[in-house]
Image (cartoon, rainbow, N blue to C red; front, side, top):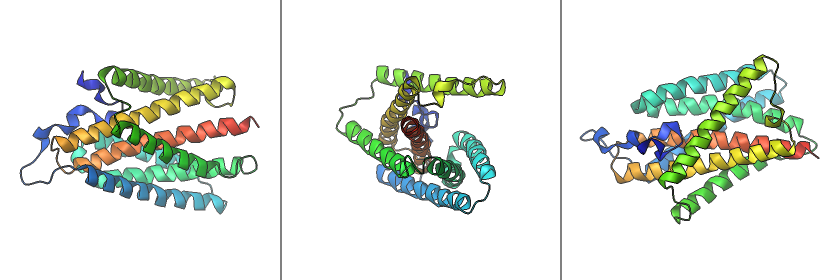
Length: 251
């Protein structure tokens, strides 16, 4: 069941087929993918600092927030269908997402300035800590992405996406699913589950990157794989930030 090789739609198994390799072109490596991931992280940081600085100067960052998330979504869709453009579009995606993340993070930092002045730093630390832990668990084969494991994570990821989409539609009709946003016990449990599912997606992302390197995927797939990792990391960060906000709101 190759469909379930990764719950991340940007890192399906078929994108790493050796047949994609062009004669004379370099091959994908794990080291190259990690280097490009680091570069994309820098892109996110740069634009996040920019939108955060706008907020700190009292400017309206709502256009940057919505422009960032919508621009990132459009670019991500193009990348999925034009993988060989990843080297050009993945940095653009991260710049867009950085605008969104910087604005949202600044807002959370402002709202929780008294209860949790370091909430953003904590969220960043927990995101990278979780990623490193998942990498170690995968590298030591403590967590093995079996077909059953992949099916469960894929189904859970899809279910979360559908649930979020339905909740957004309901809000247009004035119906709010409170536990998604509030710090009730049920809301905290929900966020913990979502964070866990996002973290488990990293395990399968690592496997797909290792597989692409082993099977000699074309070198541009390093950009595509790095982009896929960024999609998961950004999701994980947002969910951890929301979880921390729920926990601190109970104080």
